[in-house]
Length: 115
Ligand code: 5GP
Ligand code: ZN
Image (cartoon, rainbow, N blue to C red; front, top):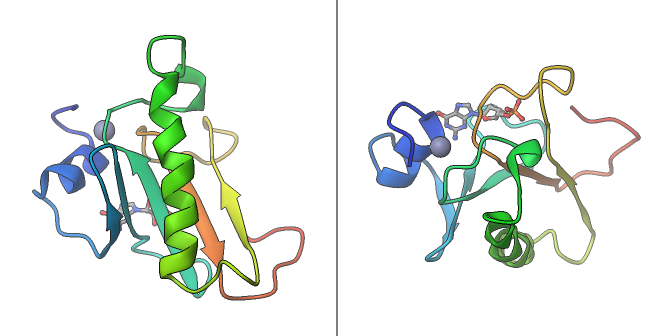
């Protein structure tokens, strides 16, 4: 947990969110500024800054995230038609929140680019 991280605050319940799925390791909640009809952020509860911060000591945190993405797709009704998963890493990618998160986007036929 990081004191001032916005997603850690959401995980701790200090900032409200529209929760889609939660388990011991993962929280999934609706993006506040959706880029598609379904736009859910899936985050490990462990504070990891970005994909580049994954190492031997914390990489196990992404396994339940991937399982949770499947659950989110099912719960939001986008499993059958398909969905896109995006991880922004670093400034050129436009990462604005330094807590690893997976954007799950669906509910619309997507072209090459969505965000
Ligand atoms: P990034 O650009 O870092 O990959 O994505 C950060 C995402 O977090 C953005 O899509 C933004 O809309 C979302 N976001 C930022 N602050 C909040 C918040 O307080 N609540 C929710 N639900 N989403 C947020
Ligand atoms: Zn955090």
